[in-house]
Length: 162
Image (cartoon, rainbow, N blue to C red):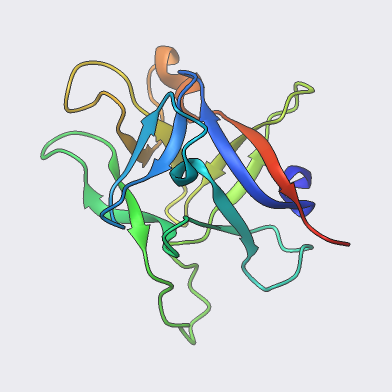
């Protein structure tokens, strides 16, 4: 969580050396090698408005939030869609929002994190043949080969004013 406390704007780079990008349609999310694109920039917000929060929201350059959907990515396959969404209304039940992510730092001295959704699943950078290539889902990696696919390098682009 420490990585996000001082960050105002970040880029997230996957294990595949691709950046998390917000699609121009303001809904789609994917990975691409072009990290210099403005759609690779994500503004960091804290769920309770305070940097002491353990939950973050990531806002795209289009004003939409990175969201963990309940919808499956492909019928009959594991993994649920990740997309951009507006800020949902505040619920009185205290239920975590679909646009809230809990960063879990990897304790190896790097700037890597796992981002856990309200479902307890992790933001995952997929690879392989289409339709998996460059897609982003959230789930729990079950195979040893895909354990690193939920790791994201946080690159701080802009520091929050003290």
